[in-house]
Length: 161
Image (tube, rainbow, N blue to C red; front, side, top):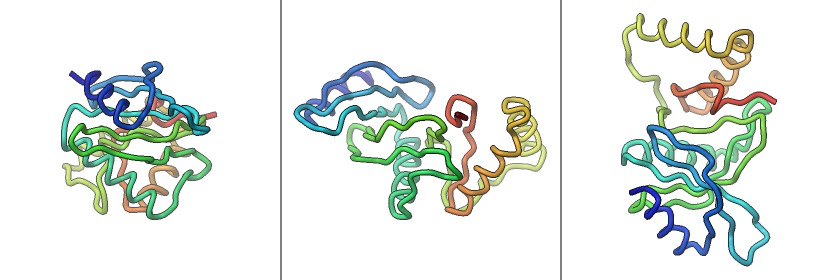
C-alpha cells in the first residue's frame, strides 16, 4: 500500500524512485532523484499513520522556522516538500553524524508518563548507546531547547561519525 503512494508522489513531483533506505513501524523511506535537476538524491518517507506523519511534519516545520540543519554537530535533514493527502515527507539526505526520524517526537512539552516508565526508557537508552550516552543526552537536551522532545532514539536514527 505504501509503494503506490510513493510512486504517485514521485510522478507528481517528477522524481524517480531509486532504492529503499529503510522501513519500520512508521512507514518506508526511499531515495529518489529529481529528473532534470542538479539537486541530486532526496529521501521520501511514506507514513503508515496520520498521527506520525503530522508529528514528523511539525518537527520539520519547527526546524525549518529556526533554520536548524545540525544540532551539536549532528546533521538534520531539511524538509523540502510534503503531501498531506499521501502522508509523505520529502527531505534531504544527510551524512553521518545525523539525527533522523521524528515521528515519535513531541513538540513543546515532554509527554506525561509515570517516573518508572521514564527510568526504564533511560535505562534502555543507556544500554543501547553505552559510553556515548552522555553525548546522546546533550543532543536530546539541545532538541528540547528547540521545544522538540525526542523519544524514539536509537543507534539507527542517531548515528555517530
